Image (tube, rainbow, N blue to C red; front, side, top):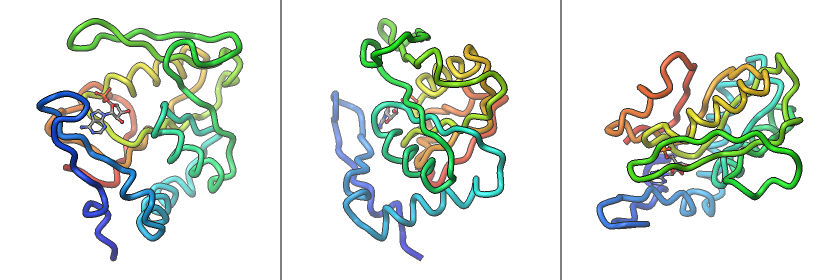
Length: 171
Ligand code: AMP
């Protein structure tokens, strides 16, 4: 079987000194690796009841939209502030310094819909936790949260306690 981890490039000191950035563009340009990554994510959810896939900007769009297509569901974007054109709901969350926020279209989810939340990588879990809150604010149910990569040393899963989580690779 293809070693997916080997197709991800480590970029030291990006975007700031001390961060080892997991660059998935090297996985995406490799047709076999991209297919394997998507196949593994989709296989996990194939038999689950999912109404919608929500992708987190921006790399979550790549995996989320492809998964939605293959799972036969719609796709909804969760974006950084000011990007979505219609009426939005916003959730702010704390960073090490300052705050950040994510937004979703108010009419993206109907109450009771089961939403699969997708991003490329789980670091501290702040972004995914805020995104999950947005889904719930609209009355959606977070069926599960999927990431290609889990940076386990950052313990992002602690911030997502109570949610069902699936990750393909752990570093
Ligand atoms: P967090 O909210 O800390 O879990 O950060 C998650 C978001 O930041 C994801 O959308 C990731 O794409 C990105 N991210 C954080 N740390 C890294 C890293 N070391 N390499 C690549 N992406 C990262």
